[in-house]
Length: 502
Ligand SMILES: [Mg+2]
Image (cartoon, rainbow, N blue to C red; front, side, top):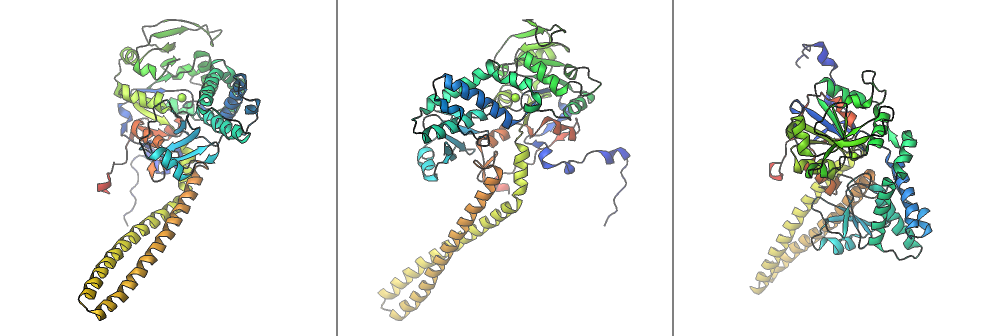
């Protein structure tokens, strides 16, 4: 065995090895991304820099929304129903006509569904959704693509379930519209943000590595920007909570960023020519300030609105040299990808649980692959025996017609043996199918008690996983995972293999 060569530079040995990074904290690559080619790194705030406690946030939204629904004429009971915050995941589809919640695979074929908390049987799914092309963008359906919207699903399923159990007839479409209106109102009128800011420790995880991650980018010469839809007072308070006092080199959170834009109105920021405004801030009252039109983007100032074209023009940067880090598949990732050349990093906080489940299922997944190979083999055996059976039947008929009774009888015996073999193979196949189903159920439940994997649906990608793959250059569970990598990292995607290349 060759001796290990001493490393030429002692420093190299202290560089973090990618192999040593826990899977839950790795950056996963769909499309090659050379960080040496990136000048500006931008960040969304909510659910990207600010990691919310999903369960606490959902409970807060549910409570605020249920109270408003009663004001809108829904029965008092909606404030005391059982709401399961574990129920929803991203990528679900609401059927507003039938009151169902659905999960689709990458081909937009519905594979799973619940009415309230009752699973919809396979045959019903097939007859309702699989026999003709489903159009998820029509008003009948609503796609759940943000973590904010998970509470809408928890409310919807909880109310359908709870009210129908009490014998109330539910107008499914109206219910969903009212939930959306009430949640929006709770965000607009401050019911939710006020509660979050009163007790941020309860609702937000302050990532101790976030400041260092941003600092590392800056040390490597990257310029950073914040581009958030949140309004200034909330942005100021939240960013101060996340980064204030984190590193002595930075007197305030604003010193980490070269450009700060709030109330950005994504995805319109990427598509429309909205006016860029500057907020003049009184240092004594940093949560306020007046607005005026702006013609520059300067460090130390705070902007609102604006648009992609002005952004690139004022900063003299081309889109391919910008990396934007966000969590919203449509507003942050898909739109920036379709309307600009920005490179994208998606924060998928569910990846931590997803990867843990994947690791816990390793043995079952192996077993599933073995069972799949056994099924293929049995199918081959079945076909071969069926061909033999047909051929023997033909020969028996020919022998009988030719008056050769002895030969016909002999062939009958052989055919009997083949028939029994067919039955044996069929029995084995039923066993294999039952085992596959049992293993798939175990695997699915390990990922999520209701929906299975976020990124996969059965052996296919889920519709959500498909969008992540199509639009995010890289994805990871939180911003500070980037600290494990060099700010000049070359993120390489695994080579794309088509089925004929495997
Ligand atoms: Mg966000």
